[in-house]
Image 1 (spheres, each protein chain N blue to C red):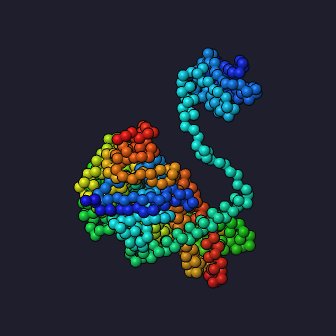
Image 2 (image 1 turned 90 degrees about the vertical axis):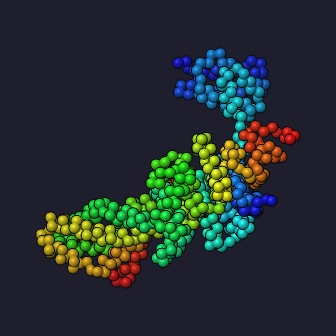
Image 3 (image 1 turned 120 degrees about the horizontal axis):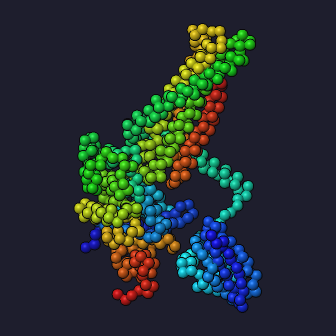
Length: 375
Length: 257
């Protein structure tokens, strides 16, 4: 292949650009830098013309150079005579300049100062909080309609959500709760056995699982599993104008899409959490039986003595609150989704992050309340 | 005798935040019209449609149905008015988790006291009208783009609406499907007396079905013309209107008629 070359030659007032070789993009042609430099260096040449007798194959590689040359020629107010170019290149060049760039069409990239960025971020957080608040209000009204039987939704949808947020989640909840129970038991055995208090591992695992961990762990699993799914489902419906279709037909999207999902998760999360407690205690039991000198009835009895009803109901109430928060985060982000595939991904991510943040904040608040109530 | 004014748009201004999309829109639609909202891409046609069907509140002005204000009315009156509309969206906007029959059935379940068998019967009938007999139990993802639009039309017609709104009915359809959809729209208007409002920029459709129109301009952000699209094409004084309707082939100077 013949390497591409650009030679500039001055003849009188005219700058002649000799193009030779193969101007193919794949061969990295030299570009227009030399020509532009020559155009600037000349003491007012009257015009530019091309000599392409040695030009071989060409493609966009040539056109890019020609566009740069014509731009520069216009900027310097030089007459450009394109007649020396191959016919195809002349036509492409004319086409490229046929529609002039409208003034103001190009996006201005503006750099934001640190202060400005901080201000914008603050405003964003505030408006996000306001949106979440107004969504909570809408959801409350919708729940009232649901309870009075005025909300339009499909029973089959509700059943589907119940299954999705309940039975379908059992395998992952089992696995994680069982392993967490085992981990707690390991820690307990190691720390307590030197004092001859190994049996208190049962207390540690039982109380930790029932009061705190099973609700939090299950809620976090459900935020990643079901909350994300809610955001993606509703977000995709938004992109497809399915939400608009509901609204125009007088069906409230919150009634139809959000409330059944929230109810499903609020009902299912306490049940899953209870199940997770059992799995966690079973995990602890397995470790206890293997590493401690206790019998099965001893361990079980110890657990029963340690875990009171207060702890149980405290844990279940937490799970109920977490269920509502996870479902709300998922649905709210889904409804606030933009109109593109990227936006659906963003909504899903935000749903999970918001869900987990809400869970942790609510857990802290509830723990403080429980301590003050003496539960 | 001129037909009664069915829909009137008065001094309508549409904006997103500070950005005004269209201002000072004024036009009327008579009962039984097939009214075209036209203009170049991005001029605010769909936004105008959204204001007319209650999805986007205008910043100024109002839409009047049978002389009664739409946005200025209370929430419940607006809901009542909306029930007289049927809308089809650009991509059909069928609910993807439901079959075609369930899509139509949901609307009927919402507003009628038909039993399951009756709902299914109506859904079947509507699908037959749009040429989709036998597709009751298909999901939207299992049918083609043209079929989705027709199914969307069947859903829009579920409650026998007085006014049908179409957002880009022929966008993305092959010429024959687009033509069939146009014929269907004409047929529905003639047989049911429905008023039809169509957002489109497909010239073939505009001339085939439209008998009244408004032309929106993106640069001046207001309407340039209103009336029968054929008359606008042949004799409107504004070059931009004629040029659009003649596919960019209009002479600068208007020829003496």
